Image 1 (cartoon, rainbow, N blue to C red):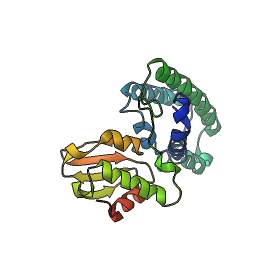
Image 2: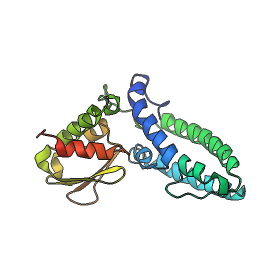
Image 3: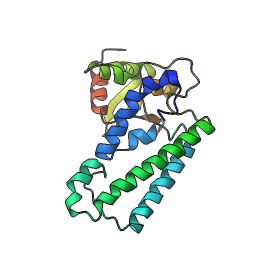
Length: 217
């Protein structure tokens, strides 16, 4: 997606995309990465599901066995390496499927002109909050989110899980989903009439705390 982004926007999205990709690789938490494209292009998510299933089949055919205790990231891979069956071959398979993913995704994004991050029609892209330093970046993102949600008075409660903000919203008509995406949200879900979930990533706890402590109205 970075390679397929417009040249003038590539640098702006690289920080966030590389961060969530690294998180996915190390921990196996793929949700932020998947939510960065699944709502923008369900086709890409379908292709992702097919390729993931195919990789499982190939691993079975190659007689690869590897357990995991959390979410099948590199940390799990390293911890369980000694009891796995043909674990080195899994690395080779991962590299091959990485190349396949790159070629297929790049071709579909460019050929179908899919509006993945960095390919939006807007002339400008909002400053990526991940480019801020220290705690400022979380407060920066929190302030934007509060504004995009219609102000703090429009938010009844702020909670979070591992990667999402879980919010109670008084008036959904005041929520600007497009602005949320521009300000760092990897995805937005509405599980109920007044429930809103914003996919942020593993730094969500810091953003949630910043939103709770913000004096922005």
